[in-house]
Structure formats: C-alpha cells, structure tokens
Image (cartoon, rainbow, N blue to C red):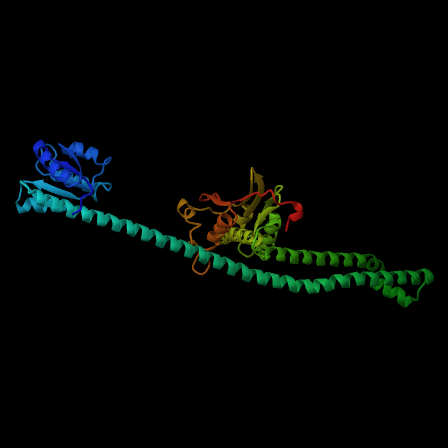
Length: 436
C-alpha cells in the first residue's frame, strides 16, 4: 500500500477532519486540514497536495463548485479529488465525476475503504506524473536530436555550397592566370620591340630628312607622328588592363579560399571587396532598373581571427538578398521612379569596444515584424518557389554565432529598408604580420 503523499482534507465539520486525519496520519501520510473552501483555494497554490479529500455539502462554496474551480486552473487541474459525502444518489455521483473528481467515498466511511481508495489514487497520480515527466524528457530529447540534425544539415549545405562555388571560382581564377601571364610577358616584349623600332625610325628621319614622295604620302596616311606618340601609351593601357584582370583573379581566389581547421587572421575588407566583385554583374543596370549603388564606409579594422571563406559566404548571402529585394521592387516601380529614388546598399565597418562591426544596409521595402521574427529560421523564405531555399540566413547566423562567437542581428521596418549587423570578437593575437 502507498504510504507516501501529501493529502489535504476539506470539511466544515471538525469531528470529521479529526477522524480522517487520524486514519491517514496513522497510515504514514502527511495530512493538512481546512474547514472551508475559500481558505483551501488560497492555500493550495502555495502548498499543493498530492490528493484532495473534499466534502460536498459545505456552507458558502460547496464541494462541487470548489472542484470546478480547481479543475479550471492549470496549476491545480491535475490534483486528484475524492469527494466525501452522505449523498449517495446517482445524480450527485455523475455530477461529481463530470466536474473532474476521480472517486467518491460515502459517509459514514470505513477506514480500510478510505485507505484503499486514497492509496490507489495516489499511486495513479504518481504514475501519471512519472509518465508526464518521461514524455517531457523524451520530447526534449527528440527536439534536441532534431536541432542537431538541422544544424548538421546546415553544415552540409554550407560545406557543399562553398566547396562547389570555391572550386568553380578557383578554377576560373586559375584559367585566367595563364593567359594573363602570357599577356604581361608579351606586353613587356612588345614595349621593347616598339622602343627599338621607333628609335630605328628616328635614325632614318635624322639621316634622311627628305624621304621619297611615296614615303611621305604613307606617313601622312597613317599619321606617323600621332602613331609614334600614342603607341607607347597604348601599351601602357594594355598593361594596366592586364594588371586589372590579375587583381580580379586575386580577388576571386580571396573569395573562394578554402578554410583551414583553425582560424587565421584576415582582413575583412578584402573579403567584402571580393564578394562585391563576384556580385558586380548583378549590381549593374538592367532593363528593369538603374544600377544599384554601393557605398563603402570603411573604418580602420585590425586583422580578425576567423574562417575567411565562411564569412565571405555570410557577406554573399546578405548582399544577394538585398539585390533580390531590389529586383522584386523593380517589377512594381517605373524606371523613372527608380532613377529619381536610387537603390543603395551601404556597408559600414567599425570597431566598437572589443568587437568588429560590419553593418550592411539597404533602402529597400523592409520587412514586417512577423517576417523579421522568422528570417533566421531553417527553411523559411518569402521568395517564390524555386527562387530561394530558406537556408541562406540560417547558415549565416550559424557561421557568425556558432563558428565565430559573434552576433548577427537585423533591424527592419516596412518601407524603411533593412540593416544586418555582424559583430565579431577581436583577438589580440592577430597582428599585421600574421594576417592571412
């Protein structure tokens, strides 16, 4: 027999309270008694019992109303209630059970019957609580497993996405390097050849100041004086263009760099610039809208210990989303309106206390509170089917928060644009010499 539990007895007759209390206390239960329902309802929230013995016929608030009020409160609804009453008619019993009572004890009661019923319902109550606790624990375990699976999926998507993009961009950069190396060498050789040829031509002009008519006519046709002056400049321009392509190749490799197992000290501005280079073709004007302006307000940033390739993906996701929003807006606005109200992305970097801040703001249509509350959720997207996976910002938050110990937040309101703020901790170990 169960002999553990706290029992509250509610009865307006002191003699009944005394008898019931003696029987239950002798059986090993902890017993509290109350003479009326009002006092009982005030006591129960602060001293919840495991079981309540409740008299039905009491002045003021009777047992039925007391039971009804107990079952209406979530904090007391699960406490089992056994009615004690001289009423033995079927209608009273049905009413008691309909209000949530678990049993009925008819007065005058037998001690053994009281103990058996109390023991049975206490045991059931404890079993129910144990089952509920197990359900809670199992639910928590399942939720934890689902969260871990979700994070693992994000990591896989992130790794595969960056690996594919990195391989593509790195391959393009490698292919560019070969012809650029040839061009640089050829331009240097051509400059030497042109210098020698022009020097040779100058000697002819010096020793034969009056050439034949055919030579003079040809010199006039090709504008020899202009050609002689402009050809070295043309070679310099070609060299400048080749250098520009070389810098683009370097930026591509910067963006697609493969991260090591450990963080390295990196210049975040290089990562932002390389990301903008990748997105440059999307920033240009098209048939629906003018070019998107990018304003770069860079502060003085020290090198930051990070996984540069991962942060480049964060920059890519946020900037690409802003461009997507502008493209959506262009479908609903005229070209003239967009020319008068330029679409802009502003990138601001700074150091605030012990953190680096990168703020990326657009002057797009903004978001409602309901959308903003879910933007970092796994698989949430407002884009049309086939135009968004709902993974970009979830991956971005995981990279910033979990992989870098930073913070990624969003400020937005309808009609007033959106700003994403990336915060990364500064590390004193980074120095210019160790910067990757």
